[in-house]
Length: 200
Image 1 (cartoon, rainbow, N blue to C red):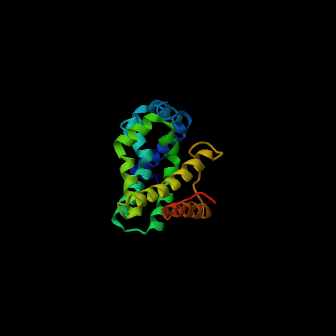
Image 2 (tube, rainbow, N blue to C red):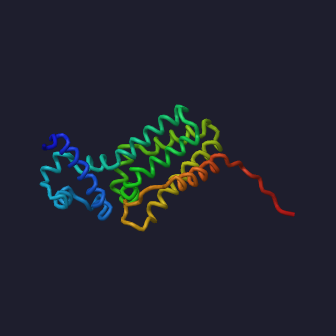
Image 3 (cartoon, rainbow, N blue to C red):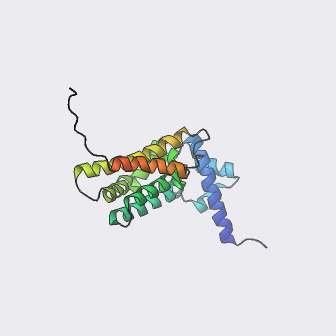
């Protein structure tokens, strides 16, 4: 029995996104065209434009899981709905889950980065997470929360970029890795200024 047309369209869209991620990882966003994608997928350019009206629409779809995750986490963190460990764990999940697949696009291609910054305002999303973690307007509390978020971002970016497979193939953290990363973030979040004096 043939599959419904809607199911086929969803499958084709998912296939386009998977191949787009491969191609963008190889050539960068600026170096990838809709025609390149159509050729690799053995589709017509008209079929490509049926699913994605432009290259920017394709980029939006690629980063959607990451952006949706950050928006949701920022709202929950800002509202105090989650405890600090839950916020940090969810941030690891968001950045190292589907988000990990587009890290190369986000950080390796200026044209993609500019487009995403203009559309998604990631600084605002991360600011909500920082404020939710700090639960204070105190300068040092905000700085500690910023360091905690930075510890997770740094671990994800460094680990995903040093993965030996093709760019975009990093599978994310396992449970043990996640614990190490969250503990490092908690250490930053709870660090105290230490006054150092001259040793006698």
